[in-house]
Image (tube, rainbow, N blue to C red):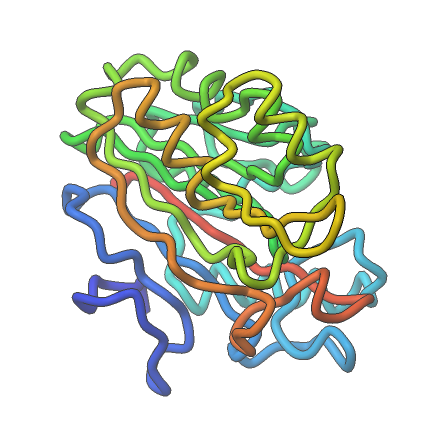
Length: 261
């Protein structure tokens, strides 16, 4: 059964996945998985881990990925990326092939119907993007290194739709109250833009709480984006989601987007 908009960023017992509440056109479909979905992964990855490189049994991950396509009624298997916390962007014009190697990238775009894009996270920020007419979509994996390295800007630059006609949705990420960082992280943003200091709140000497959502919104605003939704969740304290800081080892959940055929 393909996910439909519920009117809220929520997970129900009947559908243990999250559907973005954003003003995207009907043909742009998006969904975020949770660890509450029935799956093959055992503790500590229980149950619906989709990450292939986090220590889980490869057979369990493969079973979960197969079940994902069936359970959500996806038009094709997702294009999984080999995410490296960088800023490379992959463009796809055809559905994923079972034998193809994942592209080394942290963002992906497509204008082709039936091509499913996906990013895997467990505290990093997933962003989903779609054109206001549903003709183009993108998925972005943005941890602090990717944000500082310009992954959002590079993805938007690769898209053919003007930024003013794009919708952006900020998916589940670690919240600012749970994400303490050191000077390396703060300096990476503030040295390039003094205004980024507003996204950091001091805790103890040499450490700050970091608001990934605020940093992403700052960068989107600088690009001229004005249709930005989502944000406000905290993967660290929310049992629906995997959290790298909350538990190690842990799995990964997926943020998916595609254009309906």
